Image (spheres, rainbow, N blue to C red):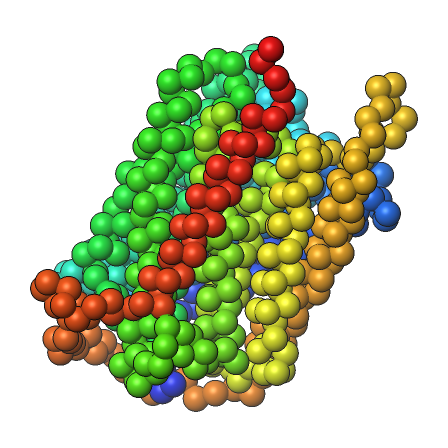
Length: 566
């Protein structure tokens, strides 16, 4: 039986178990590799949708767009999230990882599946977009690669659950699991639903592609596939919010304003967040109006409530921690005095604001059946999900990487000045990218289409000049964002290859149990007589609420002007 060894990082105090550490590194590095591939493909996508450039031919564009979506939304995200699951279980709970050999088998399946799927796309016979709707068929290896990846990721989730059992059995902690681990557990539960949905529908589609079965019902395919396609973003949401709590604790020493409220919000995610997938089906004829309204409105609002709770408690925890350090002048001294030169903080805070104002507000609007008619299947939709997936999740994972380079990878970060500016360049260019993309979508520009001008078609359509302006700005801001992403790749890969090696901490055969923290003073009195503990955060929340209400009702006004009833 192999021995288990631990090391305590001298910079963070985190305790890494050797086998878990290697698995975390492998999954994180694989994720960054697929981020690099997806980023290179983004050059082709952006360069083609930019009307003045219009770079790629149609067949190449759809091939590149298919690979871009898969590498960015599926492979980069889920590889990195598996690394986060192992980190939040083994490292945060200070225990050995359950079944490391099975975890390596899961990693191998994920790599084989992702590579197989990519090769099938680059061969040219699988340009079916990430959604790959039937009856339009790709090559069999396209589906088989996705299935293998899904099985590997599912096994990785169960290794995470097994590690929680190991920690509980070995009594490495007392009481409930830490909040960050609880959030990761939420992400893993959603991941099981999500990945299983993909396997359930992609296995028969693979059988269809090799001629074993004769048909797959298109409506059933869309219904179940979106349990994978959109719910994969729900894994991202739970994962990146867990990272937000972690970074608040790492940078500020912040404690949750109310663990009970935060855990309840994560529970609401488990129960209701996946229902947002239904907004992709709002134009489908086979589903009743009642089903559409209930799923995308009333039930989904519980998930919206959960996100708003996190959006209040995480900046609120930062504010309380800053005020305890003496930054009490006015509403926002705590924010002005925050460590804006620390890319872990700046990246997370830019992600919080962008995810809430750009992704959150537009997501609720898209989930309203009537308003959805304005923007369904327009380029507004990718504008929305770039605000959630790229600004919310990718930027958060980038921010976490800057913390992990010296602690997990034991390397000194190269180009620290570039690292300070990278979240701003990437984050703000993506803000603008999402805004102008949603503006073009509001004017009706279609998503995924190779040529917005429909050149050479029998029925031409002349877009207003504003639409071409918006798409031109999409191209410019998209290229700037790609530069910001390239800076992250350079810093990360360069640090691992050329960064000075740091002391990792002496190995030990035993873990150190997590100490029981001393009780802290409540941030609110029983009757609220102390006033607001986080007045600045409350003011930001009110600004968000006003923006939310205004944008929501502006869209109702816009809907009323589309056509007359007389």
